[in-house]
Amino acid sequence: MSQLARAYGLTSVNDTRDLYDKWAAGYDLEMAKEDQDYVGPTLAVAYLLKTLGVPHIDPNMEVMDAGCGTGLVGIHMAKVGSKKLDGVDLSPGMLEIARRTGAYRSLDTADLSTPLVHKDNSYDATLCVGTLTQGHVGPVALDEFVRITKPQGFVIATILGYIYESGGYAAKIEELVNSGKAELISAELEDYRRTEGIKARMVVIKVLS
Image (cartoon, rainbow, N blue to C red):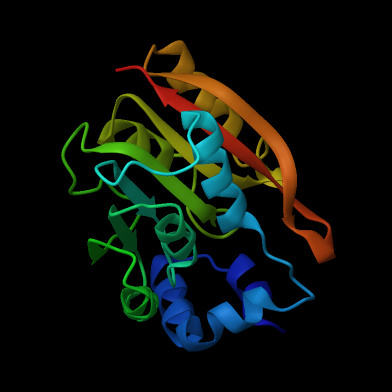
């Protein structure tokens, strides 16, 4: 069984942390293999640029990479000019790999299933790629993403297509919209791990308050 298959079967925070700590050194190699064609990080950064209507990130723009893993999103963000990117992840082992990219201003451990230590309205945008998925972080994290993002800022997250509704993510987004905290800009179903035919919703939320 691959580490990816094991990851989807996780049921506890401790098991998740342990698996990703052990997987850290080989994560990028496994996810970059042709049999995965993992395009989530690239796609999320492209969606951020498209949403902002710019070809490059303003270097003063403050962005959170929630569930940053080994820093795949950070690598793509750095390529488009990001200078103030912070990352959090459950796994210290993953964070150590992310630190080597040089793409992040700060990196800290955090359990996205619990409240974050960050202040309200801290970031111009929050990205979450590959974390809102089976056996990982549930829809409650979206509350925190909206909280730490500034009004008129954006939350961009990948959510595995087959659990978007059954996992409660669609209902959570509807709740945020109905409460006046956010506006759903789009939730397009896109290729995620192309070779295996796995798709994810590319959710773009505008924070209102």
